[in-house]
Amino acid sequence: MANRIKPAANPRMSMVSPKGDCVDSLRYPDIADLMSRLHFSPGDGRIWLGDQRMLLVHTGSVGVMRRELIDSLGIDAARGLLTRMGYNSGARDAELARKVRPDSSITEMFAVGPQLHMLEGMTVVEPVRLEIDVEKGHYYGEFVWKNCAEDEEHVRIYGIGAEPVCWTQIGYASGYTSVFMGRPIVYREVECRALGQSQCRIVGKPVEEWGDEAADDLRFMQAQSFTQGLSAAAVKRDVKPDASVALLGDTRPPTPTAFGDDNMVGASPGFNAVCHMIRRVANTRATVLFLGESGVGKEVCARTLHRISACSDGPFVAVNCAAIPEALVESELFGVERGGFTDATHSRAGRFERADGGTLFLDEIGVLSLTAQGKLLRALQEGEIERIGDTQTRRVNVRVIAATNLDLKDEIRAGRFREDLYFRLNVFPIRVPSLRERREDLPVLLNHMLHKYRERHARDVTGFTGRALDALLNYGWPGNIREMENLVERGVILAPDGGAIDIGHLFTSGETIDAQMFGLGTNGSLMPSGSLLDQQAAGDGEAERVVRKVNDLLMGASGEIDPTSLDDIETALLKSAVQRAQGNLSAAARTLGITRPQLVYRLKSRGLRV
Ligand SMILES: [Zn+2]
Image 1 (cartoon, rainbow, N blue to C red):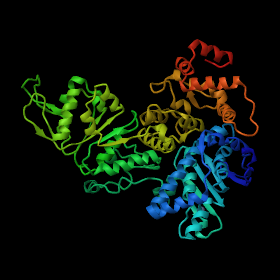
Image 2 (image 1 turned 90 degrees about the vertical axis):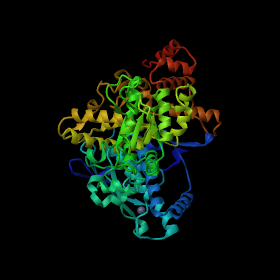
Image 3 (image 1 turned 180 degrees about the vertical axis):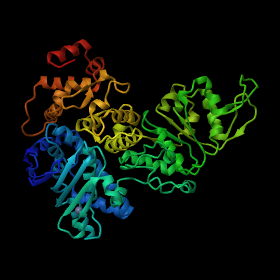
Image 4 (image 1 turned 90 degrees about the horizontal axis):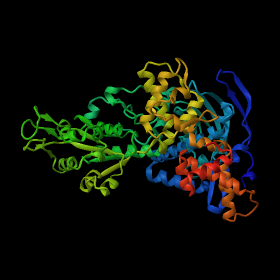
């Protein structure tokens, strides 16, 4: 079926090479490589573009949804939602771009975006001018859109107006180019059919080159600014507008005094949801529980919450419960009184007392001893604490924010965590997504950290090389944002002055990366060594093809089915099992119900490295 789709028009592309000389004879590359990744699989009700499931929807019904959004939420909120939806799909397509044309020129690789945009039926994209230099971070893109589905629907319902309306498409272009470039690129629609013009025209540049001009466009890529609804106290302290949270591309160096070492950066739906929850709960007295893997930035979230809360004038005291020896936890938290039945020679206030009038952040709350949990519960319920060795109770006015990467319900079942404390803490849980769940934020975060460490170490580093970017975008980030901080900081230090960060500057054999676990693929991207096995297949989507064939066979798809050998299917299964087990052959063998020696034999007999 895919073959029946006619290739899109092949307009001439006027391009400018990095050196600035104009090349105006380039055309879009053949779109066949992209079309071959589009698969209709009616037997199981799926459409695939690469490994992404797609939908074929009616533009009319999208128009109905758009109308409902505008009428119920107002034009600003609707525009924001649709822009971010487009941003997300552009970011997804950019990941495909790097896979599909790894050996092409940079402009041909970039053309995947405009070509997919056409293939997906959004619009005709005609390039007017395109300048790309990934390493130097230079980008200028100007395109004309014709037959845009979005303004067609909008004009049909609302008629010609005063504002451009191709919101989803602008989001798409920004998301695609930001991920492709590894830094925030913002597009503006400078002409639109909804303004009565004959076509739409868009211009994209790095966010810092736009200055104030793009402030309005940026507004729609972020959920809500943390500076709205700041407490009176915070406003008094002269908080600079929107510097507190650089949701998209704040390129200013962070100012540690005012905003802490802030990494509340992102544009993904998952991140926006977290921001929304933080804003909602900040000005209440509710206890907040941050959940999520380690390194996702739970403490940064807690600091942000404190900063915009009514008690932001009070202290913010952070305690990592796992970092304090168990025997000392209680005295650290609640303090000690001299004499009595303790050995203490001095009376000392605990963290609770020091946080009086402010916020106490308890990280890794799941490791607290049961006794300490009991005292914490009392502090939360009664608002009073008792120093160790003291008979007197002290009133404290503290807002508690807790965080854990453990599943507290499991801890309760195991008898290690008090259920009553859990219910007390779980009043307002906020789950912070892992970096893997917010991949479209990678360019924004990388850019943010590049600026931060460039400033901190006074290094003149231009950006990331293409293959470094590939590796960063493909990487699994088990250590989340904390790991990214380490990698980028190391890269900034190691990269040559005036040059770009290359792959060797990022992934050294240091503590963050287990050298055993990762290998360099042929295209320069980093992958778990287990998946080197399937790398031979990764390029041509072998697993995908096999799945399709098996599916067609079992689901009785009509028409001709490509012949598949049983051997091909077995090979695909073996590779996939090894990949899923991240190269752990015993684990892979278990998933296949065979022994490790049997697996090794089968892999070797296929000439696969083990
Ligand atoms: Zn338009």
